[in-house]
Image (tube, rainbow, N blue to C red; front, side, top):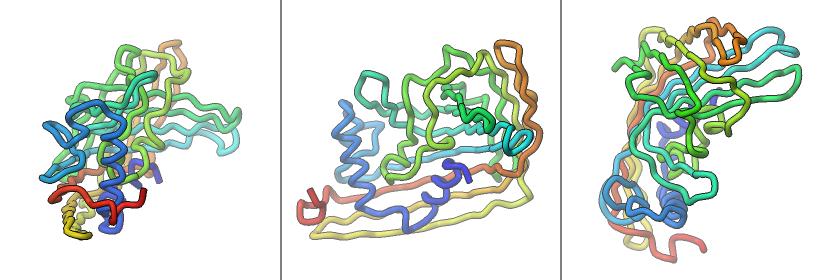
Length: 262
């Protein structure tokens, strides 16, 4: 199961959404990001009183190509959300709502992998409202590569896994440009989940309302043509899915020192 999938399922689980994990994650963001958003300002989702909402829409596909011993594993994961980006050599920042594609290729024969993360136009990743159809049609270029590792903001606040198979991998040896065309087709219906959780501690109150849907899919991909002329045929895989969820977080302030260990 891809980490994008695990992140979505974690977000839909009441047990995964707790005041402690939210405050811990928000505190990390506030400590590392020199931005008003880090303190719960406009456009952010940090600590303090008030309400914030984070949404995420994603798809994932894992292809096992060839012999398990000598073949290749290809992971392609588009994710649309706000992210915490860690630029190389700079402080972390909260990005605008945007769409990224993380892609990795691992060779079972050599044990060597390559990968990269790309920021693409939103219209290149389209998802139907019932999650039964999604498409990714993009030509990935060097100019679109992410400025550093990126974690979906909801995953950061919940101490959940990175999206996209362990988070967008660092730039690897992918020969660019690379055209990717993938279609996800669902079985007809999606799993739906709603969870509400309230935590209190010494006058502090925090409520989490999470709702979303998750659909299993058949992902059918094109033959990848790399910038150096090499090719890799994806075909179909059932190790795929499409997710869409939202978490609304409401709190009356910050837990006191008697609630959070230091």
